[in-house]
Image (cartoon, rainbow, N blue to C red; front, side, top):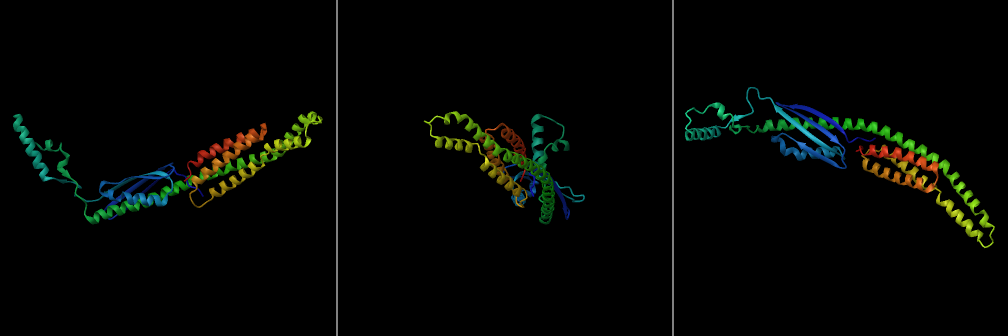
Length: 293
């Protein structure tokens, strides 16, 4: 079974007075790349989040967005910095005196300076609750992302199997046509050399050998055998229990190599047309494989 690299997952959890939400978004990538955005007071857990995601996914660019809130009743999560207020009052009064302004400093003037407020660090137990809430939400998001990637992988699997079967059928047409193509080449060479064979100066054995060699050059039996082997290996990889995206991409390249050789070596219009049909299916396969984990 294969998984897609694209998907979305969201998880939510509540622990104590803290509630966390985590969203994961995944797109294609050659490797597993994880970018994490945590609340500032949980930034020390960024490495842990990255490690947990990389344990679950082998490929894909995954972005993590986490939020956490605490219910503190009537207590606001900010405090006034008394020293900051006094410092700004002193500066504003000094400025007022220097400018010859008689109007007093008012509260609205102080509110222009956000650093008169501070956000106190949460108590240790509250900090732990916040991380646990985010951690549990992360587990839920990972599970949902995995489920979505598996669901999209099922659709990819069906499409890839269908296209591999199409190439297999076209290969059967090549295998049916190839022996006739070899025989036709041999007969044509015999006809062309018929008149020359009457010349006693020619080495008949050497001519027969050349005819056999020329006929062998258009024989694509070995290429067909290798191509059929690649198709079977591709099917096996599709049903592997481990991520096989890179392997599928490599096999697709080998399939393309054999198809090109068959089309060029056969020197036959019918086989060339079949090879074009196979390459059309293969191009769609190679595009889809880029989405496989």
